[in-house]
Amino acid sequence: MLYLILVVIDSSLPARTFRLIDYESLASIISLLAVSRGIEMSGIFSRIAPGIIKLSRGSEVRMMVLITSVVAASSAVIMNDTAMFIFVPLVLLLSRITGTDKGRSVVLTAIAANVGSALTPVGNPQNIIIWRRYGISIHRFILAVLPYVLVWVILLLAFVYLSGKNRRIRLFAIPRVRINKQLLAASVILLIFNIILIQLGHAIESLVITLAVLLLVGREAILSLDIALVFIFALIFIDFGEISFLISSMLHSLPGERPAAVVLLSAGLSQIISNVPATVLLLPAKMPWLPLTLGVNLGGNGIIVGSLANFIALRISGIGLKEFHRYSVPYFLAALATTLILLLL
Image 1 (cartoon, rainbow, N blue to C red):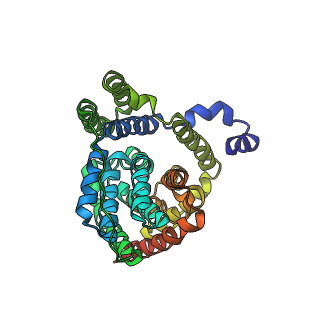
Image 2: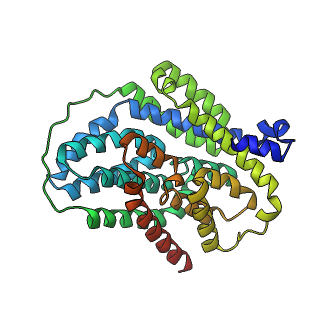
Image 3: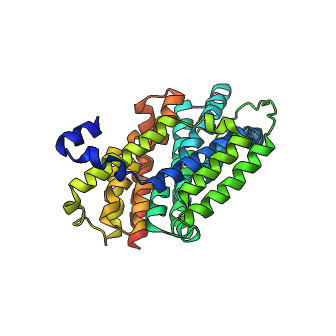
């Protein structure tokens, strides 16, 4: 719909449509989505789940601390959207059997995925786009973002403790799942391979190799890819690339040299149009990459439109918007205020 509106505004758009797509970033996203699916479908996370239950030792709060910690750590590697497909069904099962608050558990899991994915260039689509566009080395990216992510995780764990009930839960056994070691090994190797090739500017080649290898050892990972999601990302590049073109004169006057202002702008815009479109829209303004990264990652929390991972969590769990915002909005405001204080210091 947005594309059709833009065509009416600018009749030259159809001729420029395919030139607006950032094919390198799109190839990077597809490669990492495919590898994430491979890791997921290997069964490794289903093997990890029983360990979380045993380590909780009957404590509801301890169980949620473990789950959110594992989700946050996993999202840094497998992307926040994929983490929702993996962990939300597990959280729903745990909530149903133990009697814990389903809505609270799902929202805290979604926040953990959004926060944890901020740590690495491959943790979410907006980071991939920024990483690719600014040409930042992976270790520089992680070291710069790490202090903020640590603060966000500590704040999340505080939310887990403050919103949890100090009661005992019943432990239960989970059937042992067989791990597809070949698919797991291939996916992990491809993940490392992708990071290196993308860093060197060979995202297209990385995609070709990834698809070829997975066709041989894990065709199910490719067949289960969400093709609609790929088209959504392509449309995001087209639509918001065009909007950037139409308002290019305004973008030059944005607060590029004031980190706190960049964080506020990018986080606020993410609350309206989601963080990936906000990233694409703000790229032409050539803002400093770190405040932009912090803003769009923070903006994934708060209002549900902030991140696609939120929609996935809501769709799978069936919880209501009011229930989601009960925890996500306070966390977003607290994390945003803390980040601005850190920037000013």
